[in-house]
Length: 102
Image 1 (tube, rainbow, N blue to C red):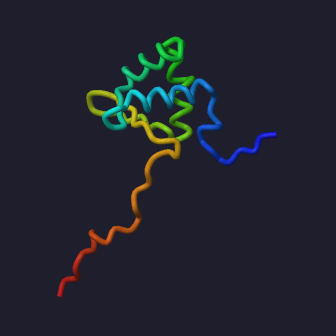
Image 2: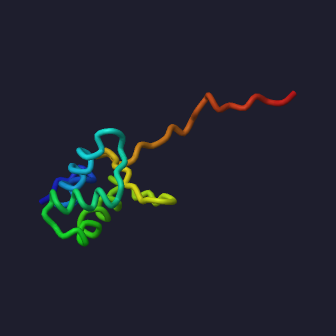
């Protein structure tokens, strides 16, 4: 019997959970890491083949909203989110009110 509380990370495989932890550790300055660097680090630290990293770690993390793969013009980065997933922007921003024209 699983008394899951809806914790996204609890639904992941052990490999994906470890991958998320390692990615958070690697992103000391900011929350981004290059995809090629992430794949290399995860293959080494998880002890799996580098070709299996996307299928066993990155895709499950992306499905759980714990990372976002961000294709750029010259390189692909991974944005690593906290255990709660991506931060949600505020929906109401009083600073953006536009004064009415008279």
